[in-house]
Image (tube, rainbow, N blue to C red; front, side, top):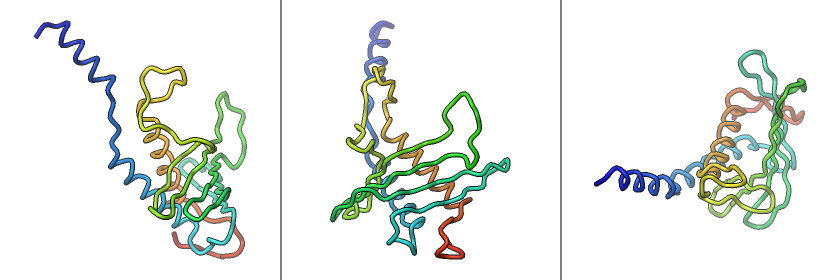
Length: 163
């Protein structure tokens, strides 16, 4: 095989990203369970507030707010940011919409009105990663784990909560 053919085959292979559906589904199931742990004992509320203490004496806040609900799905808005706003050159807050599928026990990130595709061509005008959906759901997993390990509830109805 010539070098030109090898280069063409390598380029073609690189452009044919195939999403790992098993890993994506497992991540969705774990995120659904993580959210359940955070809401445990206060499922009747429509908002949950947490303070997160992390390395370097940084205090952050995480807020989950219940949006639309139907028989098999719920929509939750997650907002995360520092407790005290600092003037930086970049945005320090994060907001995402999460759709919960109760019948199958999955949670996934949406942008509120559409779901992310499993794969995107690269490069693209929106500058999305090929595996944008997986990366966003992994970011959700990281935030939920951070809250479960280093966070505590700010709701006054319970004096303590085991996650």
